[in-house]
Length: 554
Picture 1 (cartoon, rainbow, N blue to C red):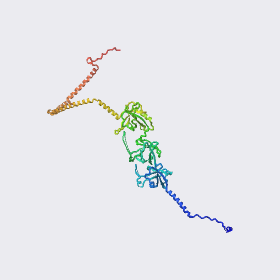
Picture 2 (picture 1 turned 60 degrees about the vertical axis):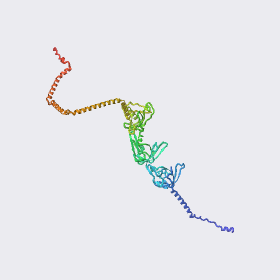
Picture 3 (picture 1 turned 45 degrees about the vertical axis):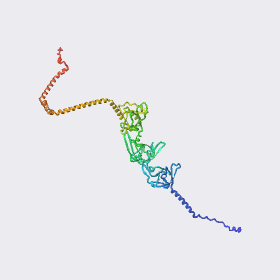
Picture 4 (picture 1 turned 45 degrees about the horizontal axis):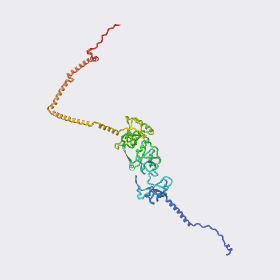
């Protein structure tokens, strides 16, 4: 073929549009989209993963232990492992999407399993179904995916209203989680948590008090242990207090306002801390923070006088014993100690017990009052408060005849003068009486008494003989006729008495003679007066008046 022919046969190629994509390719694309959607839906339905920290994995099983909220399944445990330091258990759980909004910073988890505690037996329904983890949602809006599982169920739920207060005590173990909080014997809350502050070296107890009883807690409220049964032997006798049945079985804590004190302000949640007292009596004594301390020197036994014994003025408590004895060593010029038997006792007289309005009064006013009373004879003495226990207390009273008061100090404490009284004074008087009895000549006295008794016995024997003779005399016929003769004699005496009666002539003559005698006596009265004036009247005669001398007439 020649070149010309090739050129003639050449035709320019025309471009045509490309062919469309085949519909077959849509199938894998749709499958991919569906797969992605199914994968997303799977993970979306799978829920969030959270980590739970526990102290032990007891009762927890992978795939069998569920997370529940109000008895509705919201998740399941997927894995369990030890922490890196082997001090705890880390459990991984998967939470359903509907429950993800519950996972906030204040959400709480705890294991529900059979428990035997003060409230009885709980969690019996888990014996067959197995233990589960309870989820309590919080109120926070911040999400969280790592939690610490509580050892015990919380006392109050997150949506329960009330306040939380903290009690401080120097000793731990006074209260346990779940113990009741009582007000006048009625349960108004529970102990929520306990712990120990190593910095302050004291235990703390957090209480939750339900609404509306939170209004009862004020800034001046006091808290004390409610053991249910409180028995105390003191100088005042036996004090027995029985609480409610719940407090008797479980114990708890009570609170209230001290008598005669204002309520104070309302307590805010978690802001105020209160002290926990061992008893209500100790709580009331804490009000007497202002006081004066004195030392009393006793020269008698102080057995039965213990710390906390009352100091009373005529039955009214005004203080208490702080320490008995204060010391037994020889100290100062007063000679207290074993060498002379004087025992110092430290006491305090409390301001609020003496003055009703202690806030307006002061310690200086109390000191001046006591100094004035000491000068008036105020003295302290030991007295028995209970014969059953032998407990003693210190009694203050005024003794006007006491020795003059002389101020002094003992170990920098002012001295309070004392006086023997009560049992000690009685013992002293009994001892003096026995000493006097020992000095009496009892032997010679008894000999005289024996001699007198012998003489009396002899006299009684003589009287016995006289009685026998008198009986023989009365049996004679002459003595039996004596009553008739005696009756005749009485008749004669009666007749003689009638002769001298008012109507008899003898009585009239006697009256006339008496009248004449009276007349003679009246006539002799002038003579008697003259004899009194001049005893020698009968011998010398009466002085006659001198004759008048005639005078010349003017």
